[in-house]
Length: 311
Image (tube, helix red, strand yellow):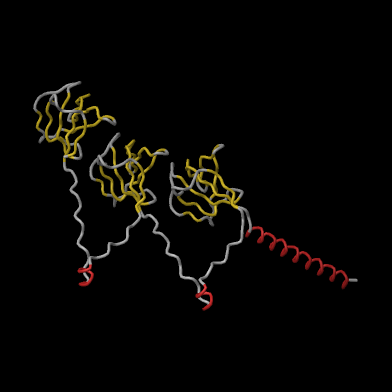
């Protein structure tokens, strides 16, 4: 009798083990063919493991797990592209490309096609030669109006909202900037700045990705000698500018004038030549350095048109 009970218990244990293994295999099969969707949207916030984006019918929470591949650090206003499971757990989060349209797209699961081989390679049993991948951008240039400087962050107005540019101890900052200044920032893809300078009149507002260009081929004569091509001379940057504008206020050493994109602060130093005393409403003409420190402040003439002129 005891032997029969033992046999029954053994058979029960075997059935349980087989049932668990079967469920595990089914779960693995379901995982391998789980449907996915792609979400392309503007990022509103990152709250711990959740990336909150703006969807067509409200906010969408995308959950990042320890298995999620995140290509870089993202912040408010970035347009991201997320490959997620149907429960919004992310498999991959990357920056959206210029051709990625905002929205949610369900991806039909299909087996990956076998790589095609050239007839000759197939005959020899060789794998096809790898296709050269296009170079990914390593940096980008942001030209925008400055809204605020909050410690190490330069907050500018972007096309899809505010952009935070982070200055580090390695960032080259050409001068001190304030509200309304139009700046040009060379940044990495995570918005850490390499250089921040004043934008020039030919700098178009927007964000431009910089793809590393291939090295120029040397001239035939230089190539024969093994020499590198001569470096191309860079155009000189302006060292000063002239500001013609109406005076709003004089606050100690600062002459505050009305510019096209907001107020401009012109700083007078002990070296500044000031031809007379000015007050509210006077139209002045100031020759200043690129950091707005004045070399000379005088009354504007009848032929002086308001504006900022690079020299």
